[in-house]
Length: 388
Figure (spheres, rainbow, N blue to C red):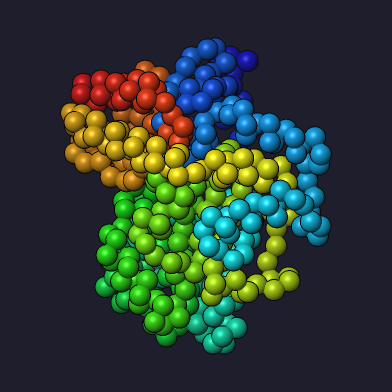
């Protein structure tokens, strides 16, 4: 099938929800992707922070295939080893007490919202259900997580929104003003990814944590994009030296397969009882086998390498003409530029480099294992395109 035929088939049969770039992803190795006609691309996107170890990682593939050769699915009425082992590994690495598995970041956040309301209902009864999120946040596209998303433009066509969310300025005072007697939780992205890779101020986050703990308001940290080594720590909250009550994650956890996880710490470990929540596919044994192969290799050595690569890229990116500012941590970087981000991303693609956008910024999320040669080649293309 030629590329034009593929595009026509896509347009005819797939719902038009994506403003796709004009490229086909057919195969690849590591941080290099190829189309079916052999065109190569350096990958600075990793499927929006999903392909943690790039494409065709041998250890990951073998783990997935080994589980496929046993059983591809067992519903959650029964026990499976990969799910139990993954939950144990997440708890041991983070200090969490319990984990609920789902299929995506939105589902992980839905679970956190339900758990926060259930925790508060059990302790305080009805009426204490409101959750404070931040302006310009993004928590998902289901109706509940869309309501949690602090971007009114994204709500416009889908009203009435689910009741119970307030949107604060990204500061301690902003959050404090939105909290009241009916508040059960505060939900934060420590780096707002979709709105431009904007890290929160560490001192402000510490104040929010202290405020919440004094009032038994749960602190939920959304690590869907920042988690699983992306920022140079296993989870970004480690940079901020805080202790959340619930942490959600997805994207890079299973290295390319759909998996979300909601982690419950001391205060919330018993928020759910049998029947309070569930998922048919959540914790699928094949997906969990893939995640185990990723998580066990996210060790201190690799995380330090991610920090080093991020610092190297930041130094070189900040020297490029028309780059105003570089934001982010580790291999989650945003570029504020003087040109149109979508135009620049399309020109980079024409020259063999995949970059993403976030609002009016470029967003770079390369595989954690990307090599220096691929980094340098990608930076060269970016430099040429941005300097024109």
